[in-house]
Length: 392
Ligand code: MG
Image 1 (cartoon, rainbow, N blue to C red):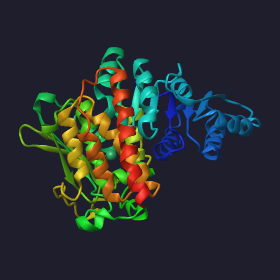
Image 2: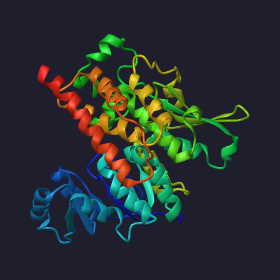
Image 3: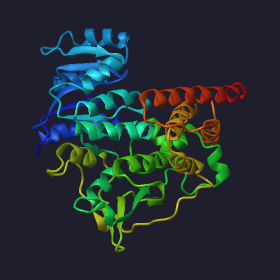
Image 4: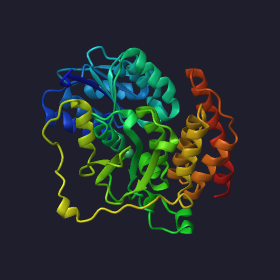
């Protein structure tokens, strides 16, 4: 395949979904055959009107009724489904060559797995999927021949840096991190950071969950786990460096000491377009990099004491098995609790650590093992949050 012809989008109204549709408009020769979104019906209806997909899916029956009503006036009315079955139908739509997996959190897991089993190219933005079940996902991809092209900017960069390189000649992967809004803050100040402060990311405009993960550096931790599964490197061969300008999107160090970096403006449209057009390249859908305008590029080691979530991710990866799924589940619950004002910023890390400590890692090579680990970790995180919530 040299060019994307038809795509499905899981999570069309989110940040990645909206940018994907901008790239689709830019490319001009890509058809959107199916789209799934959550509860933002108003935006979803606008997208349906503009892109005329054959199939759409939303979160539940209630949303489906609203969607039926809102699309009744359209000339080309889409087929409407809902719930997990709806997401799976979008992910496996027979006409789709590429599935953009851009839902937030664990909800994208089963639909993405089904798309992989169906042999689709996956433009993967939902990192939780690989964090939860990297072993299952990569085994399914090997069996079906599905190609996973990462949309996460760091992994997309590494994918580009590795083109033409032999794995045996790569010494390590170097993921860059912006450092988030608290890069220069003291440990004490970070512990009591507010929701507004945590959502104020210096470089990237993203959804709320990933923006909080960027502030704790959990996002980078999840990306280390994601990198292991995408590229087949162990925790010891993946490192993280803080780079506040977010111009170098990530790097690869080769055995001879050469370091290859992929650079660009911090705009997700680049990575999305690459995932849709790979191995071809098309004219830019975002601004071009003005290096003189950027002036200087800075790098520093991450501070694991101020950002303990990054350490937790390395620990989970080294423990292996179901431990990354447990960390991911605990983190989804604790981040939501922080966003809902139930816990402090500092408690995100302590709850995640507590849930991990209470879990003994098991093999993660079956769907039921992964889903059980996920469910029990969520339950333990919720239990850990309740007393804190009661005290507030
Ligand atoms: Mg990223």
